[in-house]
Length: 92
Image (cartoon, rainbow, N blue to C red; front, side):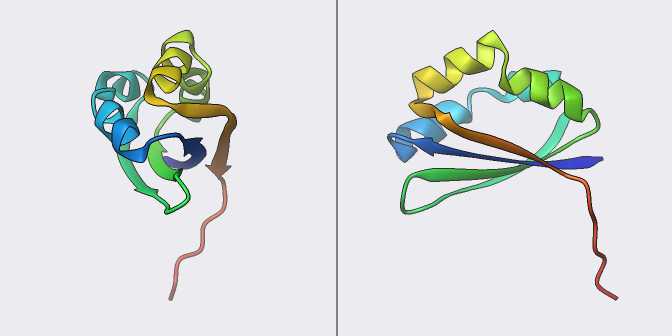
């Protein structure tokens, strides 16, 4: 399993979250098994996802379906950043 962090700015966090929760099937397609997220006071979304196929996740984020969903959900596409977590530290 690999971790991926996505950040984005949204216009209306309440609207975004309501719509985001309807997109489960899109995430299943890219083998996402877990999503944790938060919305900051400045309307930024920070999302941690676990997937067994990072390349599929990256393709999903830039797919027509997700671009359309982000637009409808009020995501500022120019603010979207994706980070693949490739290092690990286990506390002893």
